[in-house]
Amino acid sequence: MRLLIVLGAPGSGKGTQAKLLAEYLGLVHLSTGDILRDEVRRETELGNQANQFMTAGELVPDALILDMIKAKLVLDSMTKGFIFDGFPRTVIQAKGLDRLADEVGARIDCAIDLVVDDEIVVKRLTARSGCSVCGAIYNDVWNPPRRAGFCDKDDSALIRRADDSELVVRNRLHVYRQQTKPLEEYYSHRALLVKVDGYGMTGQVLARILISLEASGTNDRTQV
Ligand code: AMP
Image (cartoon, rainbow, N blue to C red):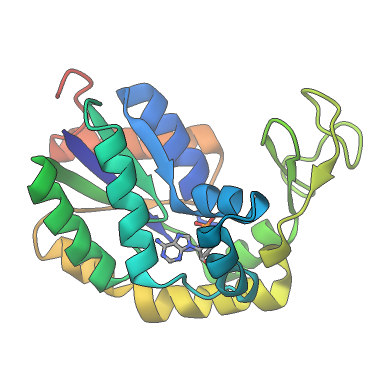
């Protein structure tokens, strides 16, 4: 089983790129943020525990995240592999992932690090909205819907994430620098880090990622 990691600050476009890459490479896309938001919506025990951290832009405790990932890996153990989006986010999570990978006989292919300037992140996230039904993402500045407030695809209402206010976004960036940045060194030490410029149109960034993966020998759709 192969494991690819997409690192990058909030708003770096890691969710969009991870989804596209998963489709292209035939891997399962696993976004810890999406899973947690779903748990919060369904008011599960995990959701209720995670909610206060997410609303403040803080990280959910490592133990909860690692249990959640373990359950997903075991559930989907027959798959070709996973693309992790938003995980790991701390060195403790990265070490936990190493242990889990050993347990299930998986290998980490690479950690793609999408690099974007902080001020662009703030602009992107505070102007972001998403469809309440199909999840399509819009941006008031770069990719506005045809009718303000409604999805182009299914006409459903667009909603903003509670943690996309400027104050919370700036805290999420601070948390990223403190707790997630050290992962660059963690993976570069093992020659697994692939840095990619995350600025530009979705297709341009995807092309850059694929070229970088090719250069590092991990862009092989036939790998199992
Ligand atoms: P994201 O959608 O990746 O921006 O994640 C939204 C929020 O979910 C984060 O600000 C955290 O509160 C929480 N979260 C997502 N992934 C993790 C993780 N790997 N570790 C801790 N908290 C996480």
